[in-house]
Image (cartoon, rainbow, N blue to C red):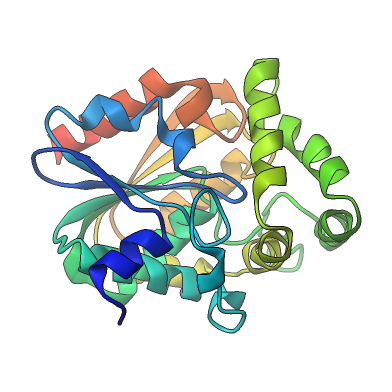
Length: 271
């Protein structure tokens, strides 16, 4: 394993605040740690806060990308385990948005000593619908294929189409523009492969293996991870709490940061 300094540089790790437990914030697909700027600072007075960028996002070291390792979410989970080991974290609370909710789950299964709780914001273990099993993920195969193809041929058009869907109705034009620009700022090759790893993953069987309790935060109207998906995650995790924010969109930490932070704080206080 690389040294702590190399790992911190690789994933642009930032640590602030003081107190325990440490909260680790992990951003969603095509984003970076700046997306937590409305929520993470609210915990710095009484918790250490750790933020990082997935490889290919933000200020991470794109040279550290390994096509084999990062072809699945387990490779990104391995990155997380290395970050937490380098930071010498134990019993941390991992707050993962969207795909990072599943990445955090896989990391906790692999190295439970680093985790005490998982907070999953807009999680989805499987984005594809499976009519024979009755599972509703929110997307048909042709929908995902179309998005992946558009990414490869027209990144700007893909970002312009997806950003409003992710942010949801009623979101400010400024935040939608920020997300669109964040999508476009990601390394295109890595983003394309990360999208394949994300949207074709199936982590439903992993839910039952969660070694620590979880809080699932779900928006009532989410085009990316519909409410039925959040309820599915909640019902299959061994020890979970479900909190629904009455709002549209997939990024409540940006559109409803106070409510998101309060739900996390209340959960930690009650547990």
